[in-house]
Image (cartoon, rainbow, N blue to C red; front, top):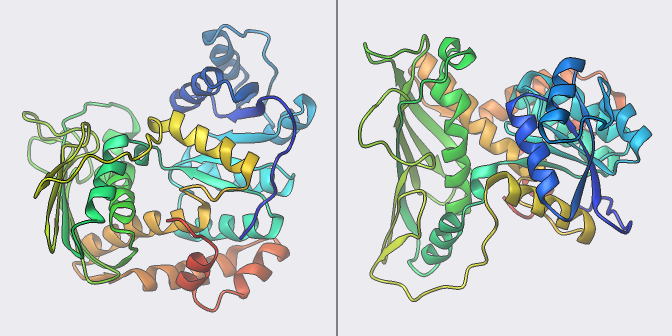
Length: 372
């Protein structure tokens, strides 16, 4: 599926929407990239937007509560949506229908149903909507994937994730904080490493007695993947001592050998593999920003295109449903229920028409994205 390219000269002018912690990280990333220029900051709080502009030394930077209007006034080419997940759908929909491509923070939306709505809106408008699944942008991850190509079919990919962050604030109070706020990174990385989408999941959650989280901060999930491989996630957000990296500690077992990756450095392979020349994708949000600008300039399919990224959020929803019910959950059931829900709730006739044409959600998402 093609999308509108941007052929103008000079840096890509961007409006960052959201002046919280992630929004400020994005303003710094945009400023640091010579291929982009920060055109303005949009936030419902004028004080937050002003503080974010002052923090980066641009106190006179244009600001507004309305991202689309600010983009129009400043001549911006696209927006970066760094709002809270509950605002992703409304902000991104407005931008797409205004003719603005969007680079959005993960997750794609608050629910899979909203994610499907956004995929259909992007399809209808012909605008690029890319989700910044930022932890895909790690050279070691790409090297691990390259080495797996020489080892035959994968039997199991396993990741351990053990950290003990004391965030304070909303994460301490939310239900399923590990699955809902963090595990999507490892789930998405598994899809990338295996070049496969999920089929089903069995998941259990629990909360150790010493946990400082109200919701369950530990989980174990086993996903059946297309092609027969299994992906296992074993993690906790209240495990001090010998902590893993934020990307987790990986072991991928294939027919002809095994790849180990600590989540930070280069992977190890047994049997040893020859040195590869895997291109460096860039680091985290700087890497996703670079890929977004290249995609818009060249029309090249990026990682994280909305149609593909919805599957990573579907893994999260399926895992939480499995943990809540104690039953194995099929991903296609999650997609089908989400499709029914969005058809019942969708307000845009144009978006609903696109959604109604999807006889199979999985097929629709796969056919419209060439890069998972």
